[in-house]
Amino acid sequence: GDVGDAAAGGRIDEARLTQMLSDPWFALPPPKSIDREAFTIEAVRGLSLEDGAATLTAFSAAAVARGVDHLRERPERIYVAGGGRHNVTLMRILATYTGAEVRPVDELGWDGDALEAQGFAYMAVRHLKQLPISFPGTTGAGLDVLRQAVDEGRVAAKEDRWPDVATANLHFHLGVVA
Image (cartoon, rainbow, N blue to C red; front, side, top):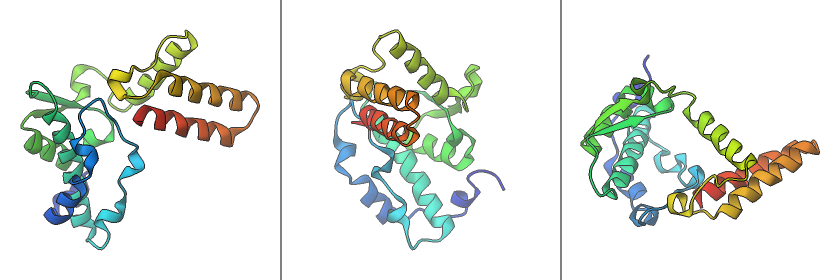
């Protein structure tokens, strides 16, 4: 089947969705980001595959819509990168929840599958040139946190300590979402 078929065949559990969206993080003003591990599958345990997929898909779309609520002006169009842009159900629900036209970034001539990797490559080059890779006004993370994590990873790789590279990568991501 197509990506998003399970969610399309399910029913959104509105009570669970409301509970998930009650997390205080959603009320915080930007700049902010969050660790992807902050929300888990536990919220939909016990639901059928289809209902769980529908509820999690609605949660993803509602989270984006909450972010849009913080903007000075509502966008007429939202471009989506990554695997989610292949999920017809997610794209439809995103449009409903945000009130915007939702399109894949590929329409702009960008590679929606490579965008994240390109962003990390860009930050790596900036780091090598000792330029900032983030600004506190964007993520809320201090530059020293990000630079330290990148340095930890570089030293660990040079010394062939690959588990420490993974730890440094985690610190980097936590710095980005702090």
